[in-house]
Length: 139
Image (tube, one colour):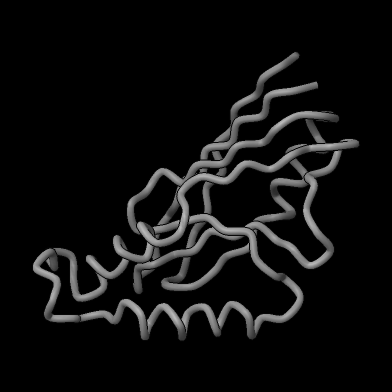
């Protein structure tokens, strides 16, 4: 049994979904991981992780439209606005999604479905640099 840790750095240009499946696949391949579990954790309170369809970009736009309706920027309900109108909505979006993902690795590949990709979901409207911690345990 072996363990390995890595931190991915992703630069965003503002709110949206940023696929980094290829980076993860390359890391798994380059380290020769065969069987085990890959755990991901985004180290921020205004971004999240998700596995989502990567074939039709309209899926990502639909998710953004849905969350814009569900948690609109500038909602007068929110008092925490010290970093702007998108500050508290970004925290709510993160609370409603996930900051951790677990991905099985089998046969040297992440066990993703045909149309699945791994995304960082930036919830702030301005560019950010995000860190995603990756931990593999297995063989």
